[in-house]
Image 1 (cartoon, rainbow, N blue to C red):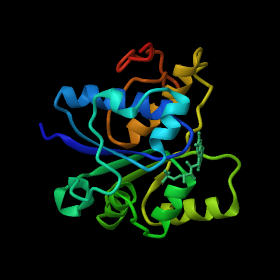
Image 2 (image 1 turned 30 degrees about the horizontal axis):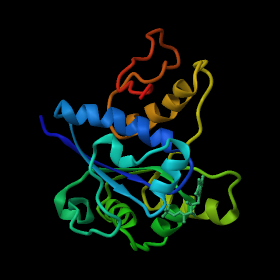
Image 3 (image 1 turned 45 degrees about the horizontal axis):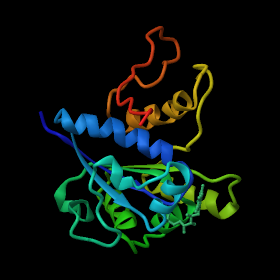
Length: 201
Ligand SMILES: Cc1cc2nc3c(=O)[nH]c(=O)nc-3n(C[C@H](O)[C@H](O)[C@H](O)COP(=O)(O)O)c2cc1C
């Protein structure tokens, strides 16, 4: 089986719990040999993580690439990374991606995804949106990215915050081509799984 090469970028928007959950699932998939996982942090990612979760992203046991270390394989199209997920995606990161400003490894990797016509998923988070934010999201969409807002759904009647977070992470995984049962599917009886369920940590 060929492993999917997926890089996760964490930028400085609110929503660190989405990133924690996403990385928990992808780390399990990496351990099963299904995924090769890369991680890159923006300059503000650790600050938001400390505020919203506490501790450091490094506590997850996934070594992140440093902000401007362009030795990372996903900094070049030739390395063949097929998917990048920026979760959460700040308006600043989206603005720079929209305008091709690859001034750190995260935005460079996103730029590579767009130029190589590969999959770029931006889990956008801000509220409300300014006209500038909306224009930038339209621009990246037209360039081939998928803007997938960090907006939970409630039709599955989530009982906990974690259940609500999973309604977003499930959609992210769907679009990354990772089959999952993180949320109750509309029109299906089968319950969600507890996969990657390190919530209590
Ligand atoms: C606790 C905290 C929460 C933030 N939440 C958001 C947010 O939801 N959306 C956003 O676009 N920026 C948010 N910001 C501001 C960004 O971190 C800031 O604009 C930063 O320059 C983004 O750059 P980066 O994503 O490249 O790290 C937040 C900052 C902090 C400290």
